[in-house]
Length: 374
Ligand SMILES: Cc1cc2nc3c(=O)[nH]c(=O)nc-3n(C[C@H](O)[C@H](O)[C@H](O)COP(=O)(O)OP(=O)(O)OC[C@H]3O[C@@H](n4cnc5c(N)ncnc54)[C@H](O)[C@@H]3O)c2cc1C
Image (cartoon, rainbow, N blue to C red):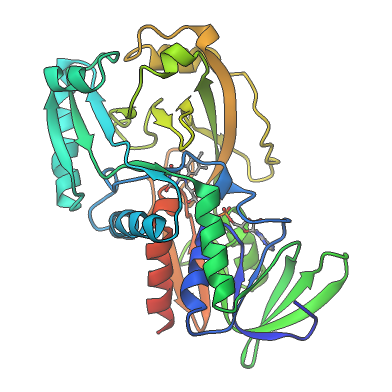
């Protein structure tokens, strides 16, 4: 990008959502993506579980639900078309004792109401034949859940956007935003540390953890309506590193979610390369907390105790601290979970609270942004 450039659409953020929007809108508009890091997906989009979620847990009337169910289908098709590695691992949500059966059935009927395809209630015998090493009395099987290579996905989105003529400018940090008579002016720090001004007709704020700060810079009251203020919630993983034990698990295994749906409990995920992980856990952070992506080892005992409820053979030495990610939420501690915010106002599109299943929903979110822009 050079100073004085004017584009149809400026997108802030080259995470999976910003890139999906760029691939979509660049089909018929001039698009520039501005990203402060030296490559795509350096924040949340590369520090997640890589799961293609099915849409089981969210309220029926939420955008999150519709976009997750639609995004799941679109991403499998995209992965096939663009040679992105994907595995239809399937997932089990398990009841660990008879007392949990009613809650399991309730979750199944809520998920069916969400029109999630490929769901089935499995008996103890059926669970044992699929996953002989876990302790469960019944399970919901979700066949549309899988895992994807997030970096390859972003590479494919970036290359489709670029082939459509979009420019993706790395090391371009958006410092200030203003509305002008005909659109928006963006003050950007370039890779050499200089400042430049760019103009766009449409502005898409897909800045993940920083989306609320940028909306504030544009003059919105982020505590007003719609509420844009975001909170940060840390998620840590532990990896199961004993190969023989990791090999016992063939699919994603989740306990029932917490009653208030505040978290999914310690669960097992597989990654595209065959790694097996526990987590992520949840920890609220202050707004001012710095985001440190280094692994720490402060929760081994808690992870072990929770996982041993259904993996009784797991030992402390089977675990190593894994990656860390930071969820972007619109709800705070003790508040009910909130839907995604995808909101348009006179050419400005705000993407707020794009936590999980944001990666799964990314292509569907892009479609939604196109609809909003008309
Ligand atoms: C622990 C964890 C596990 C998850 N697991 C899953 C999962 O299994 N499946 C799933 O579907 N989803 C999952 N998610 C959610 C998913 O990762 C996110 O919804 C998705 O990555 C959000 O993408 P994004 O593009 O909105 O944000 P990001 O990836 O954070 O991208 C935003 C980009 O904006 C850039 N930016 C910010 N400010 C500026 C600025 N001023 N100038 C220029 N650039 C800027 C940032 O550098 C960043 O690259 C998980 C999230 C977490 C934290």
